[in-house]
Length: 376
Image (cartoon, rainbow, N blue to C red; front, side):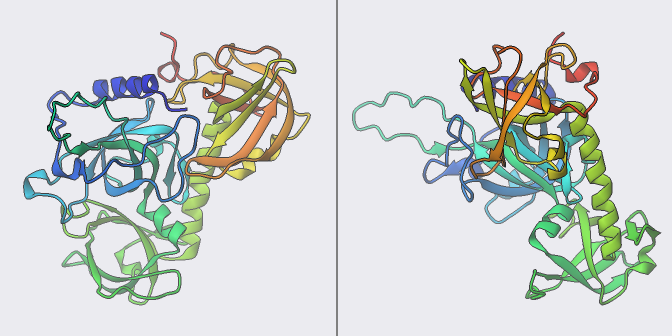
């Protein structure tokens, strides 16, 4: 559930995170003809309701799930507005994808080009108008992210690849043509920059630019998009095995992190008589992690904040058996799974709209680094 206080808390962390030398001002790209879609408390937004833009990750606070993107330049911006940093705050149900697998912000290197889906902040109260006075233009600041993904993840999700036409290592160019899932080519080729520092992944090992040859269908990760033409290639995967290796590695990183921090979701219902709490999981997790979530199996639950940080997950959790596992409502940010359990005691944080993290009994419930905890 996204409350005004939750957004205020997230903005507080964001303010601490941003450099005092960065001026966040209103630019023409923030002014909309009509109000943008507004999130509703306790509801996942419908598909197609988010505002999309891409940019390079230039700063991050992975603990509080905030950061800054340098947005790609486009025709809607004035030249003086190019490259002005845009802050973002991950929504509680916002997901991050890196190399095709779920991730946390600390997994994504600075400089990675990301594609994002964002929602407008809650609008301030409308000022009183005098007779005949026109209302001010609608100003939407899209800082609340529901999804971030690198170029690799986007390519895998959309089944999009780049067909190599030519590589000129001396000139530092890679000319490619985009292919969609039906192998339909783009109307025009694209020329990326490549350098000796560009990482080439081939099979289960590391290659060189000499391994990138005409006719290959490759996937790339980029940086400096639109700042240096279409972008610079940081990584290129020349075959399917290389892409599978990258995906499998990130998937294991995600599994380990989730087992140590719990699966996040928000409480949708509480039955005080039977002491049953129902939680809908957020999107962005490997379904294999649900293998241990079976009816009758014990589960531990820790209260969390919208940043997904917990207080003391070793001592503050409450345990109890799972009473039901079912499909959940659809929508952006919804993990598609509803888990009901019966904790030994109902905590103050087990209320509809509050965020919790669930731990399967098979996962070792251990301490987390101090900076990731909410208590002083």
